[in-house]
Amino acid sequence: MVEISIILITYNHEDYITQAIDSILNQDIQKKRCELIIAEDFSSDQTRLLIDNYDFSSFSKCIKLYRKRNIGLVENLAEAISLAQGKYIAMISGDDYWNNPKKLSHQKEILDTNEDCQIVYTAVEILKNGTLSRTNQSHIKTKSTIADVENLFNFPFSINASTVMVRNLQMSEYIKLLLEARFEDIALYFFSLNLGAAYFIKTVCSVYRVHKKSMWRSYNENVQLLLKIENLLLINKMLYEDKLFNKIAENLSSVRMVNTSKAPTTRRLSKKIIKIINFLFSKLINQT
Image 1 (cartoon, rainbow, N blue to C red):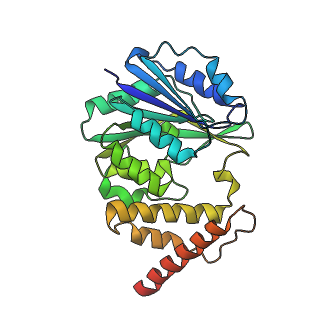
Image 2 (cartoon, one colour):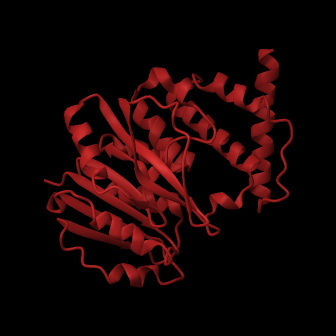
């Protein structure tokens, strides 16, 4: 029986992929009870060749999803999840890495011993310009439920996908949400809260890398904020029936001007931003 499906998502990560793979191989876990799914999205660099240098025979099986064309992060992840046979699923991006060899075993233990737990995630460090810094996650409870949604809602959002282990339950429904909402970490977090509790490990087990090739970092802060809001509105509509809206409105009320001049926005993105702003401010006006 496969206990853990480890999903490695990668695209143009030749400078980082070996550190990500090494961190997977260094996990103190019975690998013969784990499967590894590598979803490589038709990189234009040497990422695929670097992956092929590794021997993954220590795992029960290794599935390599080598794309014949670039299909994008969300679609790449969605198919990888659909193939996962493990009781639990852990995800990691090819430009991040795990820095605690007990990460998977600790998360598995929590899921094994807490039937109410749907998702376990850990503290994370950010690596930028060669310097590691701890994120501010002091407000997060060790255990959180749907009742804590408003308290957990915070910008920037607290969870990082590479820190997560989730119970492989109703993941076909998560894939539907993922394809709509587009942000894998936020969507997974709220989807999981809809099924059970979230457990937070305060020990740092993962490193999130900030670099110039990151698509998210190419947007300025205002565009990031508005994209997160759009994402949360979709999740709100699909899962929570407007329970989140008051908190969204509260956060947005301080946003008076959107400057997208420094971001490589397309006409489509600009139209989406305008649509979101108009909708949210009309709601705010109606509430006052």
